[in-house]
Every structure is written in C-alpha cells, then in structure tokens.
Length: 352
Image (cartoon, rainbow, N blue to C red; front, side):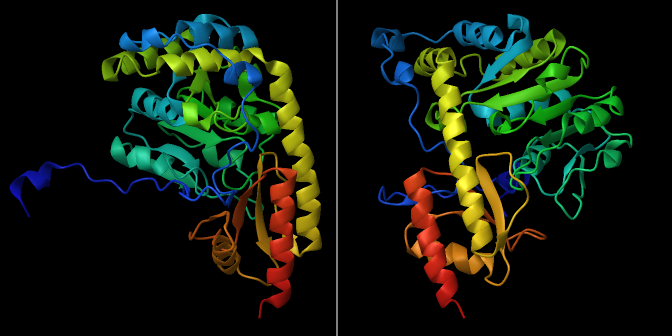
C-alpha cells in the first residue's frame, strides 16, 4: 500500500437506483413523480444574465415562500440541495455525541453511509414483522434519532401519536423525521415543531413536486436548530443552491392547486395498482407513499426484477436480509402501471 493511502477516508458508498440511459423504458425504480412540474415552473422566466454572479447564499426567496406556505417564520426553514444534502448537514451538525444514534434496521440506506463518513456511532433498531417502527426501542440513551415517515423502502407510516412517543422519550437529543413521502400520507410531524424544540422535519421536492432534477430539499424546526444548520452550511459551502433552482422552486410552491391535483392522481393510480397486485398473488404493507413494497406468494422477487428489466421495466430490488423477496415499485402513470400489470400476468403464469 502506498503511504498516502493509509490516510484516505474509506466508506462503503450509497448505491442509488439505476438510471437507465435508454429513454424507451418504464422507470419505476427511484420514486420520481411520473408527471411534469407545474406550468408555472415550466414557463418561469429565468434572467440568464444572473448566471454570471453567485446565487443568494441565504436562498431568501425560497425560504420565504416555504415559510409562508407552511405557516412558519423564515428563521424556521433551512434549504439545501435535495433532502440528501439537508440530511447530511443535519448529521454533521447535530450528531456529535459519543453515544450512538438510533435508526431502523430497514430504512433509507444513506443513514449508515453518513454515519460511517462522519464517524458517528450508530445502532439500528429492528422493525417488527409488519415492518413497523417500535417506539419503545428508542427509549435508551442515545446521541440522536432519525427515521423516515413514511419509512422507505417499506412504505409503512408511523402515526403521529407514535412519533410523539419517540419525541417524549428523547427530549435531550435531536430527532430528525425524514418526510420525503409525507405528501402521500395522512399527517405530518410538522405540527409538533413548536412543542418539541429538538424536532427537525425534512422534506424534498424530488417526489411529490416532480423536481428531482433540480435538487431541492428543506428542513423545518425551531430557530436554534436552523441557525446551527446554516452555520455548518456556510462553513462547508456558502453557495449551495443555484439560481435556477431557487426561481423554479418558488414557482412550484406557489402552484398549490397543481401540486395537490398530482398527489391525488398518484393516489388514485396507487389504489388501482394495489388491487391488481392482490389479484396477482402479491402481498404488501399498506402504503402511504408513491410506491408499493410487494412480495409474491410463489415467484421470487429477484426473478421478477430481472425479467422486468429485460422487458425494459425498471423496479427496485434490495438484496438485503429480511427484504430480499420484496420489490419496491414506484407508482407511474396509469399507462405505465397497466403495462407492468400485463407483464406480471404473463410472467407469473409462465414461471416454473
């Protein structure tokens, strides 16, 4: 080994869902919204001359729009380059204890990557047999708690009274609720941030707002949490969000009617698709997301995943303990889901 390599920080990186280069595929593997952004986004006027100057480091226009939308003050909102950036900053900012942080054993697989990258000790807490988070497992001393709600990849939603139970038993550490999919769920933990000054709620524009390509995420919490996050961000990179993302992000928030219409459209397709999965012999937890986490009674998930890919249909397969016989299937358009159902019917009938 070369001497300098002894000082290189090595981690096992996060592996994102495959991004196929061929445009003629049905892409149901990364939970993007199948519909385009609002016309207000698509028709927004960008002053391209502004590309020669640095963007607003405080992202003031988007912070103000998000604060107004959620009924908050500006100092309760933090904006970053996608929720991954926001979460990474939050790990770096708040998880500095010698005690381990807690998160579920089946969850967003970036959590352990950030913990390893920042040298944060962690302990995973096993979901129950129905893939539910067990609040009683989060009562031990720890250095912080983070979990998605609804959880990914399981799609299971933790009711707010259970979120409150976790918060009540962790008042001395920061608790991060990652709400990437909450727009498809019954209720947000946002209503609790005035009651719990240690609660940080994280959202993204990538799933329900059809803007994964713009990389916009944000966090909401009490002003002290937001102030600490901004201090770390400005110590890392002052100009994290580009000009076009700020402008288009504002326009997205302003078109609430379109946003809610697309959410309902996905929900309607999700309801139909779940009935079809049941008819075909699949089982799945009740979903409160824009995807389904499904397992077939007799056909292995890996076999379906590989055959679907050969037929230019991409779904997500995780070769991990406890979930290696499940597929995570994003809800696409009605046409896309009908094509998938037709493929599944034929494949299951012919499988031996």
